[in-house]
Image 1 (cartoon, rainbow, N blue to C red):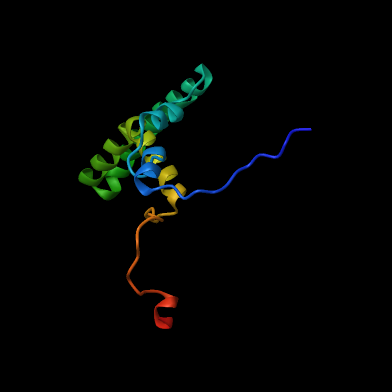
Image 2 (image 1 turned 90 degrees about the vertical axis):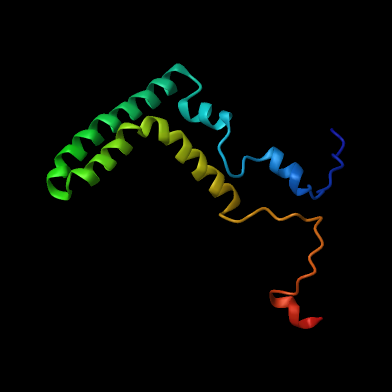
Length: 122
């Protein structure tokens, strides 16, 4: 009953695509998403961070007898600051998965380099 939509795929310039997608550094929206949108999600995120910080600091204390105080102090510091570091790591991971570890390519750029399989045919 509805008429078909007239659509076409149009390549987006790189500078416009970079403004739409969060490629490298995490955005504030990614932090808010990780910390939770509902009160239950915020509680779960807070509890997860506190549990990792507490259990990790206890783990680093006991492992200090095996690996030494210096390495255990560094490990304990990472565990204690995990609630602050976790959103950053999660956002970097999502951004990496979005690009697959590759840089974005500008489709409007004229590539004069002859590399790859097609270089020998010219």
